[in-house]
Length: 139
Image 1 (cartoon, helix red, strand yellow):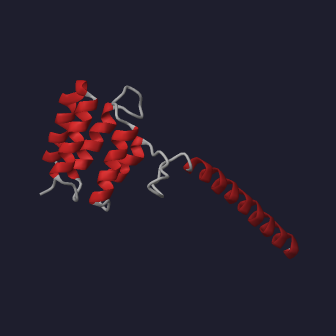
Image 2 (cartoon, one colour):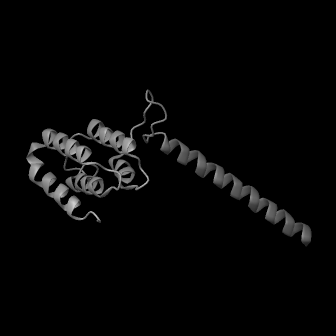
């Protein structure tokens, strides 16, 4: 009876190990499509939502903020109607940028001007998002 119990436990451990391996193997393949700057020469494209998370992270440095905003303008320059590049995501990025503890006026103005230059039809909405973001900053 004890040997059957031990064999069952060993079998379950083996099955669990196989499932964990499959999970890690498939998630590793998916993550290769994302962008993480490993080397200046080798960059993998991040989604706009992931870039937004980087801007919202309070531990992000000033240099990392600049690099992330450059990636937003390079990889996703135009506000669109699809879910990934919707106006709402850009507005959340602008508000997060304004609220970030390590941001500077020059970074906010530079990003706002570039975004307006690339998307002139959204100038009013972009300006409103910056104002809302600056108004919501904690003192």
